[in-house]
Image (tube, rainbow, N blue to C red; front, top):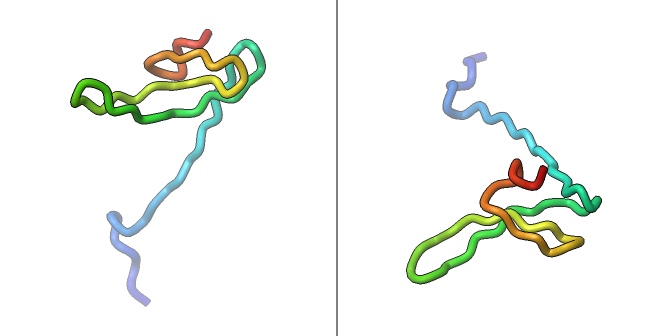
Length: 56
């Protein structure tokens, strides 16, 4: 049996981030002024940052 190519092998890793308030952080994509911007938003307190690591 042939081996699967390196491009067909996929590894999925999901990382969950949590805000200091206890809510889960979700990544969202917004279209603002003709540009696509990714923002991280806490579901509980609705705080937004550019990336999840800035919530510390």
